Image (cartoon, rainbow, N blue to C red; front, side, top):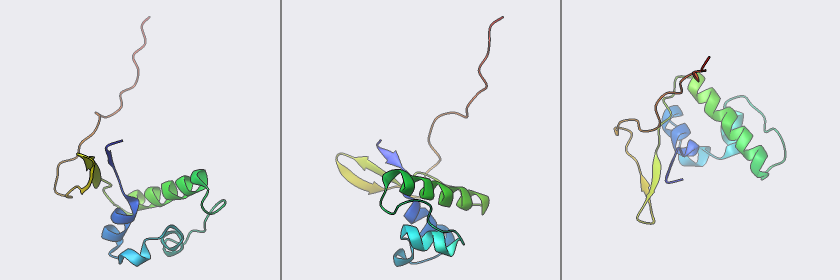
Length: 96
């Protein structure tokens, strides 16, 4: 993966909160959610991050790629950069 969405950055920018308010448990608490699962379990952390992303989308956030690796260096991607990615999914066509 060379591009991704850093949910902490997106959360902080969207809800206008400082970086110290973007820890996973704090983000969940601020959204009225509790942590599901075992803390520091990769799978449980991922599920909780997905819950935050879903809530952000419901609240009107336009989640965009905001970090990437270029030449071995971590780079921040400007929010004014056009959206990139695969085309919208299409329903499969079946042959008769």
